[in-house]
Length: 378
Image: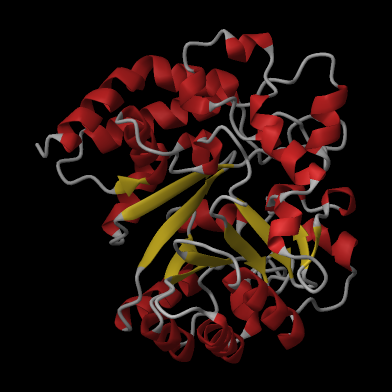
């Protein structure tokens, strides 16, 4: 039997109304073709029925893209209706949606509020930082429209948080990012490192490396630790939970990568949105059961990637805190991480390894202290 898992759904595939320079998913058009990508009602129903037939403590749908609001409000009305139709009595359903925020209408916000969607809004800081890599295809800035979307969410009482991509531009401004987002009223922050590769395996210009990631984390943590009313930062929270012996709160801290399935607009299923490629396809929701895909050899091999570590990782004092990092940061631009790990003479080390070590060396003791204080309620 499969362990509990969630779905990461791409109803509009790689389609987006923005043209973010660093977006890794826009290139998936080459896999699905250049036409509009939209999930059909047939695929939506097959996916929902199959997932709700599994045994889950909570049925979690994460709607992402591309830009998932391109689907419009009626698509999400239909999604909720299907969840109700196929859900067992007493089943708990959680919907989350990650958006660039520019297309939030009052009608969408009202639906999100009614059905308690948790909305993540992508904001890379103040205008001079955010607009550097997040324009429309025409070059027009997007920051002001994102804030209007946030205002609509708040007007309707929608629960929301913020996701910030730490790229070559924003990485130099951790304190500015934290303070700006907190001053905007965001209580829950998530900071994601941008690590994208050229075909030859070198980093793309907008990516960050280990030393810059380490400096960013140190300064961010220092700003957070000295804030009398700190915001919640997902990775810090996850590390404190780990310090207290709790279960992994992020897939990068888990010993296995089998946490969720990605379902594309076609119904095709993949193990991770970083590795959506033809040779990583597990099946399709219209022809395969989720339990069947969970037991597939490819998905099992994918889950074992976190355990395929070089000696440098195995001997590292911080291994239990990073688990070797995300496989994406270890295999460069490869689309098939299983093939890379299985054929390498020595499994590769994460691009961000030195940054994690730097951060843990300076901050881990205090993280453990903060975790103990939190557990004691002080």
